[in-house]
Length: 72
Image 1 (cartoon, rainbow, N blue to C red):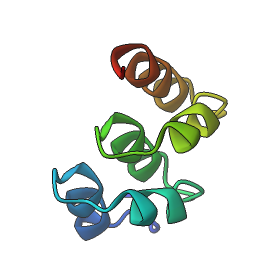
Image 2: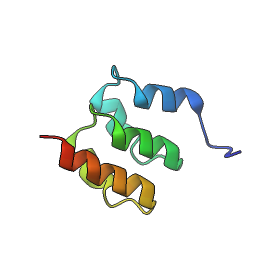
Image 3: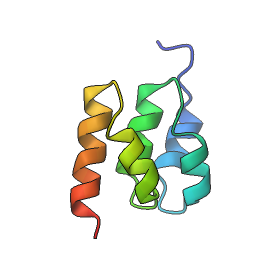
Image 4: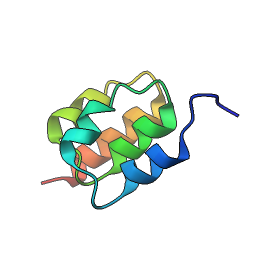
């Protein structure tokens, strides 16, 4: 188990009620699952999505790229 993994954070980051500024603040998380949750949340700011598209984790970066393509 990842000692940095936080289920509560992931629940917040996947919520439709997540505030864009909160998602932006945590986009640098050391936990790739948290960054993935942020990359796939429709409330994530486009600037944050573009940053996550450059993530070193391919799952995070590909998810962010997909989100960028699907977001008008």
